Image 1: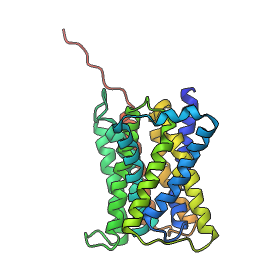
Image 2 (image 1 turned 120 degrees about the vertical axis):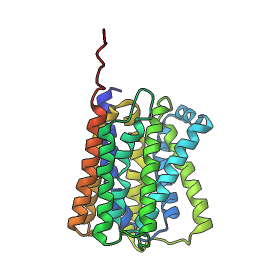
Image 3 (image 1 turned 45 degrees about the vertical axis):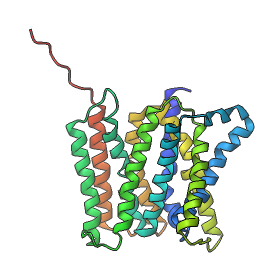
Image 4 (image 1 turned 180 degrees about the horizontal axis):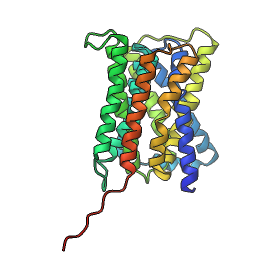
Length: 296
């Protein structure tokens, strides 16, 4: 597979993720762990279908414990927090806070061998954080006692989980994408256990909510993971990082179009600041390091 082809697959994942907030909001009031369990079962079956066609691909499950920890911890931790955020806070605001993850990927990538943190990346982080503050100011809810604070905290933590998972996936570049199916199935089981321990079962009210849940499992919480894994391991990760900054814009527009969010000025400004901050950080990361002139 060429770098260009892998990059295109990574772009497909970004497009699917722009549907995540909309489909989650449309799925009704199903508790976070229950929703994660069902959707990740769908996502795992996407990979199992490939195992049926080629049984030898199941060998991808033979990975060191650290790989399983990163894979399952990233998927389970991120989605449990993300689904909880959309249940505990307005979906547009929670979604935008969550979409700080492209910016965090840029910052975290500076920790990889041969990379360093640059002034432009720090500036981008500050601009992006300004977008998050704008969300709170727009709601008049900047205090720590805000009713939606638990949801906002979950969204913020989710951004860190996904950024860490993505960067570490680059580190474990030799792990085949077929292993993602195992991560999805393990996440489904963990989510089911947590649901049985901490939540009350709530089933969808109608067929449209079931359709949204199935769409989540097959797309943003299914196929997207396989596409992203290929993209970050074999594609142009810098270009994918820039392209990912379109996700919060698309996600917010879809929520507004679907009637799950109001097109307020503060929402538009926050979206613009988060994208501007991420783009600023990305440009700084893409510039070559200045060469030092040897002194005689």
